Image 1 (cartoon, rainbow, N blue to C red):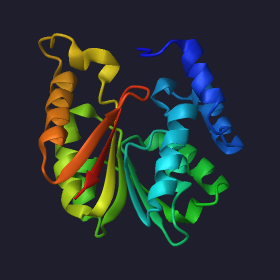
Image 2 (cartoon, rainbow, N blue to C red):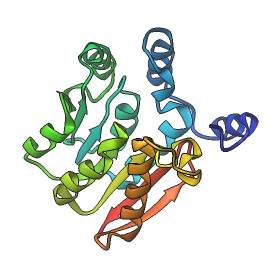
Image 3 (cartoon, one colour):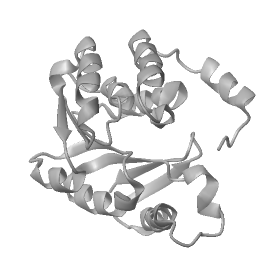
Length: 213
């Protein structure tokens, strides 16, 4: 769903920072070779992720849902020199694609790929995080949140993608629509949880920014 007209979206992208060349190549190859390319963060949202990361200046980032690595590289743009990124995905067929672009970037040695279910992997990560980006299966958003919150540094930021879910969050809930049901519960949890402060931004398919108190 386009919450804004395509003309306005084009205008917004044009008047935001240009997409780096490496990301433009990644974007193009994703659309040429990978299923469901609309899952890519894309130019405008990518610049938002980059700007937030640059403002936060994280030393440790966790990404849940790598896909082809576009958002990963955007988040890396604010990473401190000695920083580390842990990124998790379940699709083995994308590992080499991701790594090709990671190694062409300035952060190849700082990006650690994890293959498997995030529910199982997150508890094994013996570190804390300044910045987390949740962009994976919606049915587990609440589970991911509860797993990562104890691992967040004070003042750390949790970014949650697709929280408007093509507008379904304001439509009558359809029987059997578990993803929308969980997102409704998730958005309510973030609003009410006294451990964080939250703002939901109408960027692309909805992006929540939550700051850990």
